[in-house]
Amino acid sequence: MANAADPAAPLPGPGPDSSASTFLGIFPRVIMITFGITGISFAVSLFVGILCMAMMGMFRGHLPDMRLAYRMLALPVAAMVGIVAFIVASSVEVRHYLRTKRLNQKSLGPNH
Image (tube, rainbow, N blue to C red):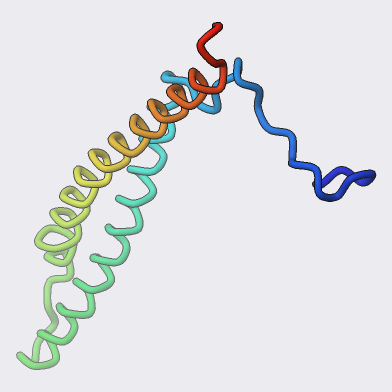
C-alpha cells in the first residue's frame, strides 16, 4: 500500500541487512513445489491413463484392468516429472538465493 501522504513514494521493502530468503528456507520450498507438481502430474497422467484404458476396452469389447493405468502410466510419469521438478526447483531456488545475497551485498556498498 502506498503512503497516503505521498502516493508516489516507493513501497517499503526489506532492508539491506535482512535477506529475503535464507539458505535453510530453500529446502522446504523445493519439497513443497516438488510434491505439488508431482501430485498434479500423477493426477493428470492417471486421468489420461484411465481414458486410454476405457477406450481400449471399448474397442476390444471387454473390461480392461484399470490397475494398469496406475502401474504402466501414472506412476512412471509422476516419478519422472517429480525428479525433473526437484532438479529445476532446486536450481531456481539456489539461483534466487545467490542473486538476493549478491544484491544485498551490492546495496551495502564498499564501506561494509
